[in-house]
Image (cartoon, rainbow, N blue to C red; front, side, top):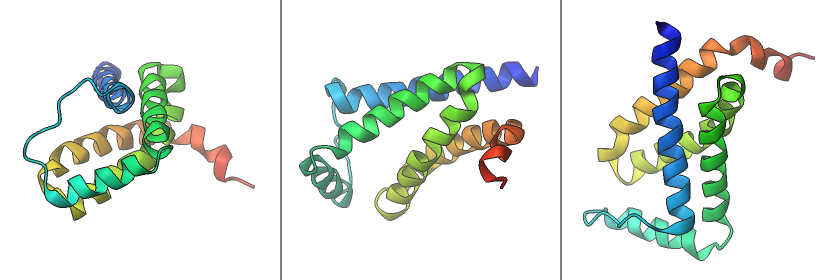
Length: 126
């Protein structure tokens, strides 16, 4: 039962990140009307740096795809974790209303990391 719940959560999280990454590349979703001014300025600054948004988009798409496959799920969590930390910091400083979804996504990624902690040990052993 636990594996089924984790699969469904990873499926939803992976699809969210794939959608977010594709939107950064293809711009098919409309922008929300009530975005804080600080967030708009930060997004405009990120757009000025031509390579940053495509890099984040590729990371989100790749991490989301890896999260969908049980065998590559630990790698997907490692790819998505730094992106989630950036999303968390942006929401803390500019748009606290988005924090609940960030905490849910962090919980899912954290669960994946805890479930696969033995796979991460070779990265930190001498």
